[in-house]
Image (cartoon, rainbow, N blue to C red):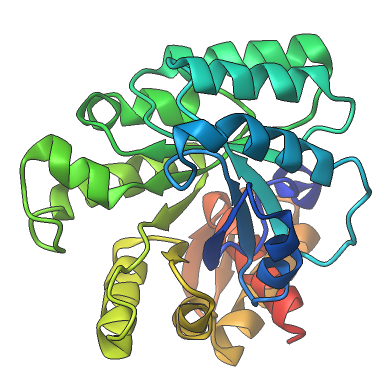
Length: 290
């Protein structure tokens, strides 16, 4: 099996994501055209309890029709599976023959929750991938184990708002730096993408750019948006330069030609683990047509 084949399911562009309400399926096409790399249909916090059943039914129906191959990753954020709404969401996914390509799991506390959902999907024969939000104190404590607990996981998401409430700290960069760093470390240890929480001040574009640059410097793969007008700035921050793309191409080509665990490029020793990041850079380049 080639290196590219082994990393294909997770080596993709995940610079930005945005939610689309499951209760409003007519808004889904607009979200898909927003420029975000990930569009997440929302069944959790953005849906009132009285509307959960309707949102779930409408969301599942969206996947009955084949979707275009447009490079946009489609995800459904279910409710916490320790709650009745979450179990109803899981049952709906298991009942359909047209499951969503990926599920986002909120309010996770332990690896067992992820393993349970993985087992249920496997039993059903669904290939649905998993994205896990780390937003509880218990999840932060167990984040390395969570990152490694299922081969279905493609990315960890940092839920800063709920995490700040759990940690009883301010929802700001410095108070949450330790928590963010733990999530980045866990994702890197498992070869996963890691996505930062959306920036909540819609009118502060410079603040958004600064927050995105801080997240990228820390090791995040991308960042969420609360409105389509934030997406272009986020994508720009997380898009590699032409020089970075060319370097990634050289490194991948060198490894494929050498068929070894390390190569020397420009006098520097480069080992095989960097290949996943190189393929991610090329996935972004493909997404932007570079």
